[in-house]
Image (tube, rainbow, N blue to C red; front, top):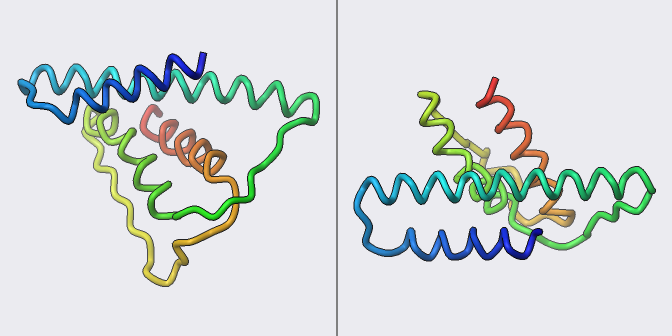
Length: 120
């Protein structure tokens, strides 16, 4: 399920990089948001099943904190805007950017927290 979702997300992003009418751009942004939302749900279901059998493994890789946060927030900007909410991210300059950990899990947690805040 994830591979086709990545294909949908990737081709939608490529299409968004082309010249589009404003209405077409808005529709594709909604497709992208929906596809990312569905991918998050699929990942959550798979992670939950791994957690139940004790097989959830966390990656320990270097990643950019700011990139993970900003990329995650980009996917939530449209739904926030649609609810007339302003989504602002201000990371103090003293917070280190390079971290070692599981960037995918961090992305999931941030996405779930902010996504729920936007919904409710």
